Length: 122
Image (spheres, one colour):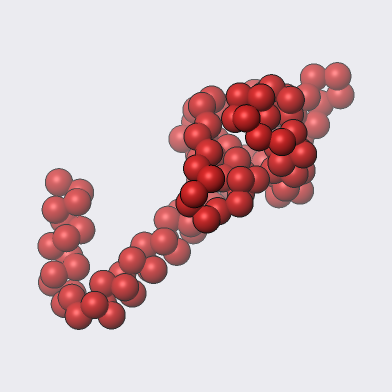
């Protein structure tokens, strides 16, 4: 599981960790029951504070994506796949809505927007 943190994108680092883990689960790069890297290991890999990783893991645990396994670490829960796929769709939908709103405000017609989307998907 590879992570990439961008300090310049305006999103808190712990939010980036949360999103990337959710996307990894949604893409099946990480399976239910699989252990995620330890707090120290991930903090070292990303060159970030361990408290930041701990905060991200705690949020994922609160959301039911991760669970603590005594003596082992944190693992992906059985219900995480559906949950993470839904979260991914909601995030992409929100970002797409923002882009569409900006396109409308810039004066693009529905046909122009559709053409841009079609070109991007081709």
